[in-house]
Length: 236
Image (cartoon, rainbow, N blue to C red):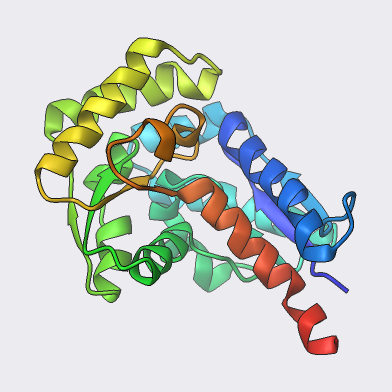
């Protein structure tokens, strides 16, 4: 029997990609083209999150995440994932009070980076995320270095994410801008790049990136699948 995955969602595009990955890739794990673990998704209005983020109210962000976790528990979820890197800044306020265990997106990415033998990781994402210690803290546990884009690049990447990607707007000029940022991270010695906003994989992948990509959205989804199906291997 598989565990029930709870998704505490934030923006629609990132959450949808995470949900779809769980359902599509779950079929291979379960050996049935139509099978996947039970999944429940809860999200408040993105505007509610952004109102708190813009004023730096991470305890307030945590309250919204906790409300999602409570509702997901009531519908039977066994654990929770959040397909939004930026919101992980609030997780220290969430975990001590959460009714359910969580997987941490940056922990999954850092573990993958270490397993693939990378040494210096470029960071991309919202300005709040890239300015934070969410990824440096987890990468450091694996002995990995990291490089942040310039302040100007962080601002423009943030604008693209918030004004375009979360609104389902995908422009060739924005793809080119991210490609330029990644190339400069490569020039700075990085050997891989974190796609540290769950919408970035919608426009950037290994095929159009000058660095190997660490797709945070799909890595989190795969970690959730692994956890949800772990008991099946033991039972077999």
